[in-house]
Length: 130
Image 1 (cartoon, rainbow, N blue to C red):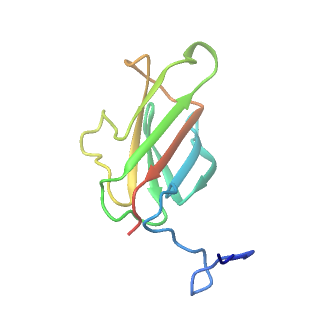
Image 2 (image 1 turned 120 degrees about the vertical axis):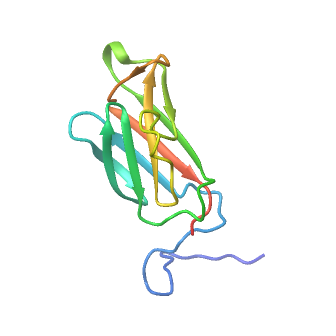
């Protein structure tokens, strides 16, 4: 059996190596969705947009190969709105905001009916990069 040891793996151009056909998430984000929205940390995120109460758009640095990827999301908040949050992979209040290969949308609901801005919004994307 051979052993490969490396401190850094780069692409042939010297940048970060691109994961394709791998099981690792191709994007993750930890977002503060209140007030002026901001990321606390992220991977493969070029920008974010506030689409209204409880609705966020995440734009990818590297696009996906098609729109058939999986968005996994969760959210949480302190106080009276803590508890059961639901996240969808689209903005249900704007029917023209379908996910694309370069962006996806989240709409957050508390107790299935109340839309609200949330302090802790998380998402991960699984699928293949272009």
